[in-house]
Length: 218
Picture 1 (spheres, rainbow, N blue to C red):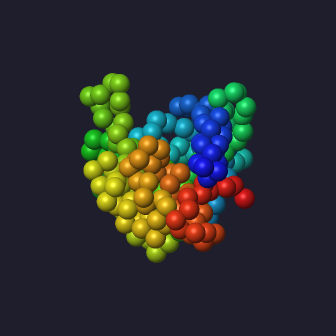
Picture 2: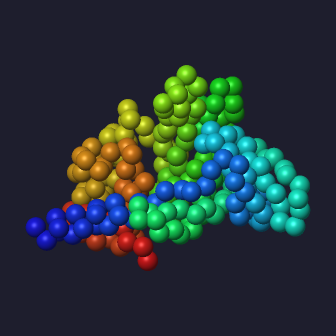
């Protein structure tokens, strides 16, 4: 009973602190790019829409007013810092990261399959990437998305609605408390970022695998 109350408390805390981005298309945000040699260059990232952020990025180098456009084949990664707000209006800043990866399809019609992918979870055994595909004939839902999970050996696995239970059960098999919850409420595809974070937390802490714990910020 005590464990159940603890989990409910964490869920309520998470709900109360849900963050929403305040940035929008066209905003110039502090950030940096990492070129193919590994060099980090600071400046400003100019935001676009979800699909175009994956195809190219517009960047203004610090100390220069010149706008430059980069494609995924030209960079290893880029990041920007945005302001987010919780449900009560409290704001904070967070970094958003994209890395160059190979997708299984273009993010927009006739586009490249080598793209900048949004890296949602970057610390631990698994990294989680979110990939958006533009659906031009659907006004209400203009994007569909899937996830890619990358392990610490570089294996890259797509996770979508069709294979979610099969793939996640395999990836999380040694953390039995998590595996047993897959498919339940709050343990579906849309919750994969938290599940990956919780698995990574268990992988480091090595607590009882039959006991589910929410990843805590250090």
